[in-house]
Amino acid sequence: MRWDDIDKQVCSVARALSVVGERWTMLILRDAFFGTRRFEHFQRNLGITRHRLSERLSKLVEQGVLVKVPYHDRPLRYEYRLTRKGLGLYPVLMSLACWGDEWMDRGEGAPLEWVHHTCGAATTPVLTCSECGEALRPEEVRPRLGPALRDAGEPVDGAPLSDIPALLKRPV
Image 1 (tube, rainbow, N blue to C red):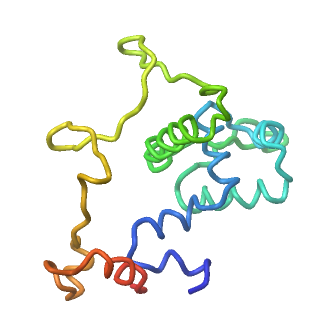
Image 2 (tube, rainbow, N blue to C red):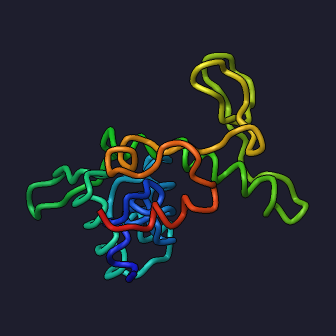
């Protein structure tokens, strides 16, 4: 399967990567969460070429992650703002930052601390169970076929975990 067709898989990870899987895209989103909105500011902050930045911003707008909003009439200029869909990527960026803090800090410590405005304390985001609130650890969570695969006639119970990647790779 070609990378351009990855969004056609039944896998949620593959579909998400079809939108945000390019390395510049995540840095653009990081800067958007830090308040960057204008093309020239993204370019200055990231050192990305105008052509590549234009491509990435256009794709994020096309996918509904960012919206272009005019901020100047003559000449017409736009800024880019996160949509609800874009704001939904916040946990992804926080998790990626935490992973980088733990595994890629070169022994220097984290470059940023995250402060929770409600209590004022520095915090480390934690992935928790939506039902019981307990922290999720890989050894305590297992996948199970969801509606998209159950409705496709795939076996619900008894499918070995090793079969799941092949099921997810199928085109829809």
